[in-house]
Amino acid sequence: LSFDWLDKTARAEIIGYFVERFGMTEADFEGLELYDKGEFVNAVACEVRPFAEELGGENAGVTLVRRSKTGSLKPTTRGVQAYCKNATSHVIDITQADLRSLVEGRTVEVAEMRGFVILRLEGEIAGVGLAREGRLLSQLPRNFTQHLVFS
Amino acid sequence: LANPLQHYERYRAIIDDFDAFSEAVRRPTPQHVRVNTLRVDIPTVVRNLEALGYTAVSEPYCPELLRVERAPVSSVTDTDPGPGRKLTLMGATLDHALGNIYSQSASSAVAAVALEVEPGMEVLDLCAAPGSKTTFIAQKLEGRGVVVANEPSRKRLTPLYTNLRRLGITNALVTTYSGQNFPQRKDFDRILVDAPCSGEGTWRGPNARPNPISEAARERLADRQLKILERGLDVLRPGGVLVYSTCTYAPEENELVVAQAIKNYNLTVLPLGIDLPAQPGLVNWEGQELPEQLALAARLYPHHFDSEGFFVVRLAR
Image 1 (tube, each protein chain N blue to C red):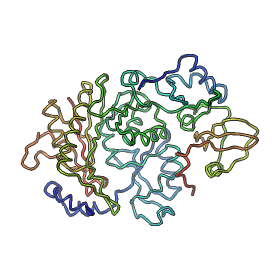
Image 2: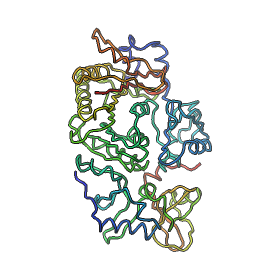
Image 3: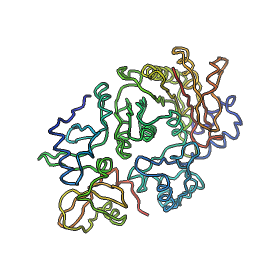
Image 4: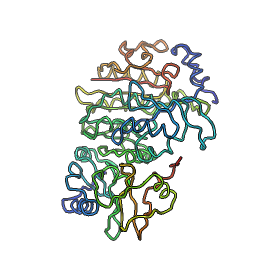
């Protein structure tokens, strides 16, 4: 299968989202190629592209965002873990107790903020949450939460 | 076949101290976890595991690989697995969810270590799922270079994707060719052929589920293994290194396959370069003389190297 690489305009839209929402810079995405994969946009190291073009392939790199039908973007947990270490805005520091609440389906109180946020646990990017009306909801994927046991 | 030892009888002549081997096979394989150094440093994981009641120490031949020497009694398993014995709880830790660790047998890690991957290299893993070795190779690349993870089995792609994403591997390309038909449009510095095999080396402990194959099936498997190995050699760059490995004791799937490739491709067998209690590869089997250089291959037996049974050899064209 061939890869549907993003052109300059589409790439700028995706990167612009991370710059605007999470305070990242365009430099944070240098060295990455973006491509469409169904409703998702994946990011992969530039060095992979010549191999993908010669060999084709099923997948490369890590899913960065999902596009909704209305065109809005939702960041993915694995994407922000891999690519968003330098995020400075809409980043919420959580404790292990907060994470446990989120994983167990409860909400956590959060300062007034709306929309998708990056969850940071003890300095490490843990994943994506959704802030709404002073509450934080988990957006962590099932493969993150399903086996997790808190001591 | 309930008892793998019945099957292993055919190897009595080539496995030294067969009684000790038999005893080791009855014990479960000790648990190892690999630290994903792309994400976190080794001491941090050791501390996190200690907080959960584990004691884990680095293996001398592979510091990223931690041997679990003590595990907590688990409410999940309801049994104390004893020193160094396997406990499934590791997959339920936060470090696992965050992609900081990967449960991997020591033997499996050896195959990746034997490749001697350096940052910037272009590496092909021809039989990649579920990604244990691919993700280790990516770690060795330190984010520079490329690893192509080839896996023809559709049903094995999901765990491969899951692991690549969980560990945050940003420079991997997943392809789905049958190994023997992998295209010859690119060549590589390092190639791993961890060939599909009869899996005899994994039959350890009380939960072992031996599934021996027939002689005819073994012949077909060996034919396929040779074809995959030879395609790997076709796309190996001059000066490159190919590692061939299996998790079986069967010489038909190991030395005999490699001996044929040596003959067809005029290969050189390289020393493994890892200090392990390995037994040398066979240079004869059932009256058939094999190339002397196959003694440089490594046979890993659980009574010497407490992990799954394994065969590994480094080859250069």
